[in-house]
Structure formats: structure tokens, C-alpha cells
Image 1 (spheres, each protein chain N blue to C red):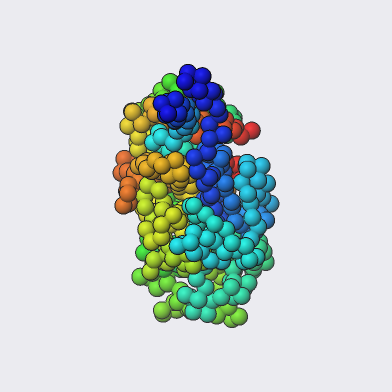
Image 2: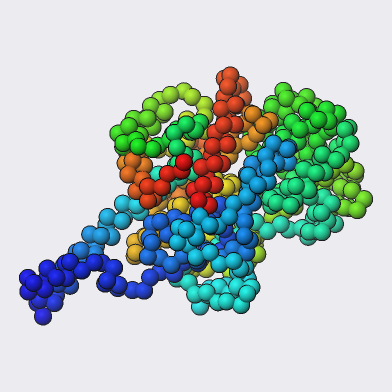
Length: 413
Length: 106
């Protein structure tokens, strides 16, 4: 008996598989999906992790407003998936086109069917071109959105370079929620910074479908100080909501006015990526309600949604939030695979925005995750001071650059 | 029969022992600490403090000092989300880098 015990005690645990290894399928290789795939593999090397991503490269939206301002190259925004492959993630270059939540299967564009024990959808946003009258993917070749980075970013950069020295740029902002709440206002800041150096008479007009915006007081104070009156903002109630566009004539219509700018940056309304709708995890809002502890869909079992597509309000739709949610979801998934319940935790977010290439401001929040909600921790919420001590905004610009370096290394390797 | 039962029990102990070792990476402290690497995984020399080579007590003391300091960076705000016990747990995980494989970014 003792001999038997000793012998079995020496058996390595791996030799005694009680159940087949868990199969995790992740759809979407952005800040959420790529981080999640890496972390699950790191926490649980025995789990089979498949990442489905159609693109060879990921082009990051964070920092891309600096590309539009001519301060960064698109190459510095571009990441491949070799780091994930090296980490043991099976990267499948295809597009997930359908999910059978009952049979727990994903169907790929190329015809393959993948079975999963748990599915993580991290599809990011889908641009709802048709929600803005006159706008379309084709129209975005004339009125770029540049809200998915890549050729659109370069197009907008070229347009502001080519426009007349006293030209007008209109940025049309959709109704919230949309990806990167401070993004349009950072973009206005960095365009104005470029104009200040190169076209001092050029103007930026923000036509907004919202009444207020992230870091509003900080932005508006910064605009006044750095750019005088060259950035103007019109709220929705001040006839700021763009309701129709005519790309060929370069016209944008609000309820009471028509604008004919030299450059129109039209950011369309957004909702969760298409696969989330196919999988039945998006609700009538177009976004995906999730459990706060596990990010499991409230609408379909064994499907988790993280990143921009998920409803995690009051967390914003940011790369920082997507990366943080992915790590917490990875821990929850490995716990579930081992028969343990997911636990409450504290998530955090910080969004840096550049006022000019060497000055930035930030807003941050921490969030208690609970079964039924995410709640902001009041003591940790806040933004940069309106009267910053000397050097703080320069320091925050360095923090922003280091954040980007750290998060992209962590996400893509 | 008893023999088999005993060996099965022993096997269970061995396996649960191994799982528990790995479960250090699956605790509440580990999930709270997981957020940190979004900024702090860089090597020393960056504008964001590096956590490389720091022991748990040092990290805990630095986090507590940050809570008392009146600086105005994002971290001076975020630190207020955590009580002392949470800070101690996070510091321990960060010192062990228990959620990762000791990967460091050059």
C-alpha cells in the first residue's frame, strides 16, 4: 500500500488528465483580444487558445492623432501577431462570420468550424455609416472618419496638409457612446498644433452631437491658451449635430445650417462589431451587456465580451480599459476552467490626451466590478488640474508615450 | 481496494497542491495587480516608475507614500481606489510577478 501511494505521489500531474484541455476561442486581435489570448496562455499553458483575426497587422488608434498632426509615423502604430504566436497562441488569419451559441461553434469565412468551451468576442466597434444620411464607407474616402487607424489616418493627414492656408476643418462627433471619448477633442488640439506651425490662419470647427465632453474644461482652457480662437466647438443644442452629409459637394448639414469646409472629418455613430450581433450578444442599444465579474454575456452562456463592444459603463471605451478588462477576464476564465467562481476586483482606466505634441492631460477612474454592474470608485476618479504646476503637462505627455510603449508591448509582445 | 482509495486520495492532494501554487495568479490581489502592467511593465528609465526587482515591502511603502503625497498625476488619483490591505496584496503579487512568467520589457 505504501509503495502504491509513493508511486502515485511521484506521478506528474500532467499525466493524470481528468478532463480534456479547455478550448478557448478569441475573436479579434486588438488591445482586448490579443491581451486576453496572451494572458490566458500565460496563466494556463495547458489551455488551447485560438485567436481569430483577419488582418496581418493591427494599427493602433491610440496615438494616431499624432500621425494626423505629422508627429508620428503610421509604422510606429503598427503591430504584428508574431509575439502572440511565440507565446503559444494559435493565430488563425480568418474572419469569424457566425456563432452557434447552443452548439458552441464559430464559423469562419474560410469555411472552418471551430468548437469552443468558452468564446471571447473582442470585435471592437462597427461604424454605422448608414445612421448618418449621405454617409457611407465610400463617402469616407472624401470625408475620412480616421476612427479605425490605417489608410484613413493617412488620408486625413494628407487632406489637412493639402488644404488652403486659411482653410476650415470640420470634425463631426457622433452621439455617445463611441470609442475613445476624448479622441475628437485631442484630434482638434493636434490639428490646431499643426496649423499653428504651418497654416496659422486655418480653423477647426467641432460639430458635436453631445452637450458636453470628456476633460471639457481642460481642453477648452488649453485651446484658448495655445490656439486662441482657432478651435470652435458647437454642442448639440447649439446646432452642432450633423444630420446629413453630401460628400461630393463637401457639404455637412445640421438642423439649421450648412457647412462647406475644406476638410470634413466625419466620425460616424458606432456599435459593437458585427460578430457580436451574429452571436446574439448585442442588445437593442447595439452594445453587449456583460456580467461584471466574468465579462460573460448576459444574453448567451459561455460567450464573453471585452473591450469597446462590451457595456462596461462607467468605464469608457478605451485601449487602457480593453487591456485591463482582458487581464481580469483572463483570470476569470482560468478560474472557470478550474471550477472556481470569478471574483470581484478593481479595474482602472486612464486616458491621456495631447493638447500639443509635448503637453498632455489625463482623466482616470477606478471601478469596482460586481455581478450586476461596474461602479466608479469616487475617491479615485478625476482629471488633471486646471491650474497645473510647471512641468505637469509635459510630464503627462511622457507618461502617455510610456503608457503606449508598455501597453503595446504587453498586448502584442 | 483501500490501497486504490488511498492512492487516489494522495493523487488528489498532489494535484490540488499543484493547482494551488498556480492559483496565486488567480486571486483577487492578482486581478487587481493585473491592471498595473498596462503602464508599469517598462524597464527602469521610463517616466513611469518601473517595478523591476522591487520587493513587496518596497512596493507597498511606495504605494502608501503615493497615497499621502499631494502630486497630481493619474496614479496620485488611482491610488485612492485601494485600501491598505489591497495595497499589501497587490504589492505582493507585483513583487512575485505572479500573473506573468517574469516577462520584462526592455
